[in-house]
Length: 123
Image (cartoon, rainbow, N blue to C red; front, side, top):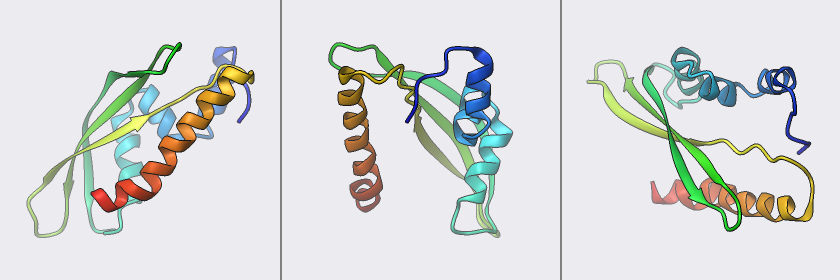
């Protein structure tokens, strides 16, 4: 992970490599629907994203809140009624590389490992 971009142009360059982050930060419901649809196991499903809403995440000790984005969607599979789904996105931009930031990065890494392993089984 590198430094947080300082200029708006740098941020745009970075986001161009991160389609989910770009869709979330620009509130692009069509792009988000395309991303979700492309990653569903049932390729016949159609996704409509109704809205992307930003809320405030839990505060990290000594830091500021990390925003949580909720993506409200409808997923339709062939010959089925649409099902409402909610996806959660947490976007973390780290400002610099000091010891405090490294501790926060490890905290987010632990959280990510949880979602990659345990959360799949809980679902």
